[in-house]
Amino acid sequence: MPTLPTTFNDFLGNGAAIEHLRMAIAAGRLPHSLILAGPSGAGKYTLALMLAMAMECERQPRDLWSNGQALASFCGVCRNCTRIASAANLDEEVDKAVAAREELREVDKKDTRVLIQPHPDVLIVPPDPPQLLIKLGQVRTVIQSSHYLPAEAPKKIFILTAASFMKEAANSLLKVLEEPPATVHLILLAENPGELLPTIRSRCAIVRLGALPVEEIEMLLADRRPDVPPAQRALIARLAQGAAGKALGFDLAAYTAARADALLMIRNAAQEPDHTALFKMTETYRAGAEGQQKTSALLRSLALLLEDLLLLGAGTPELVRNTDLRAELERLGSVLSFQWIEGASRGLDQVQSGMRRNLLRSLSLDAFAGQMATSGR
Ligand SMILES: [Zn+2]
Image (cartoon, rainbow, N blue to C red; front, side, top):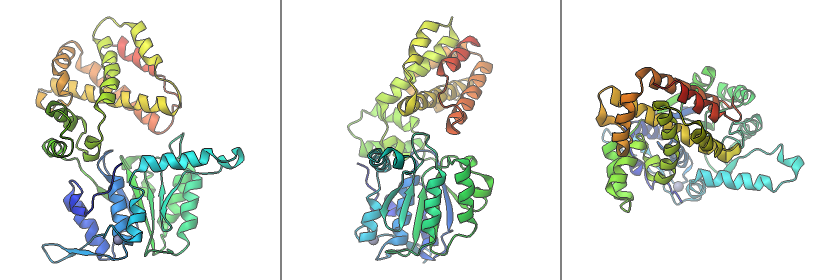
C-alpha cells in the first residue's frame, strides 16, 4: 500500500515548484484555485495530499529556507495529518466508495456519486465510474460544502483528481472558481490542462510537475526495487517517462503483454496483413471498464513503439525506450515508411482523445487495427 513521503524533502523531483508552493502556504498566499499539471505517476495526487496536510496540520511546523523564507510543512502525526494521509491510496479509496454504492438500493444508486472524505474538511472528488468523468452531482456537493466554514481544520480543501468533466459539471465548477470563499482551496489535478475549459484554466494558478531524468529514476529503482534485475530496471526507467510513481509501481509483465498486441498491429503493417491473427487479438478486448483499461494499456504501448520508430528514424537511437526490442524496431523501421508511422500516430491520437472525451463508448479496435495494417509500407 502506498504511503505518503514523511516530509516534503522525500518527494522526488520538482524541488523548485514545491518550495514555491510551501512558501505560499506559509505566507497564507496559496492561490484558492490551483491546477497541478503533470504526467500520470508524477506525484500530483501525493503532492495534493501533502499540501492539504501542510494547510491543515494542527502543529503547522515550518522549515527555514536558505534565504530565510519560511516553508510550510506538516507533522504527519496529528489528527488532521493522519486522517488526510489515510487517503494515500487513491485507487483503493475509489474501489471502496464504488463498492459502498453497489450496496445501495437501485433507486439510491443512481443519485449517489463517488466521493472520498478522509477528513470533515477535506473532500476528494475522483472521476465517477463507469464513465470516469466528474459529474454534476459531485461538483454540486463541492459547491454546497464550500458554503460552510471548516469544522475541524483551518481550511476547506477540495481535491479534484482528474481534468475530465461532464459539460454541466465543468460549467458549475466555474461558479465556485469565480468567487471562492476565503477558507476554500480547490486543487485540480490534470495530466493535460488543455482538456479543461479555458474559462476554468484562466481562473486557476497552474503548477507543472516536470519529468525526472532517466538516470534519476534508475537510481530510485535501484534503491527501492533492488529485487528487479538491472536490465529490467533500465527498461522501466525509460518506459516510466519521467514519472517516479509510475516507475515504482510499474507492472512490466502487464506492459509486455499489451506491447505484444501493439507489436502485432505494427508487424501486420510491415508485411502482408494476417487478418485472422489481428481479429483473434482484438477479440480479446471486451467492452466495459476492464476492457477499456486493457485498451488504454494497448494504446499507450503502441504510442511508445511508434515514438521509438520515429526516434530511430530521426537518428537518435539512444533515446529509444523499448530498449529490449531495439533489433526488431530497427527491422520494422527499415520497412515502414515515415508517412505510415506519422499517419498511425495521428490515428492513435484521435482514438485516444476520443476515449478521453468518452466519444467512443466502445472503441472499434478491430477497425483501427485493420486500418493500420492496410496502409502499410
Ligand atoms: Zn499534523
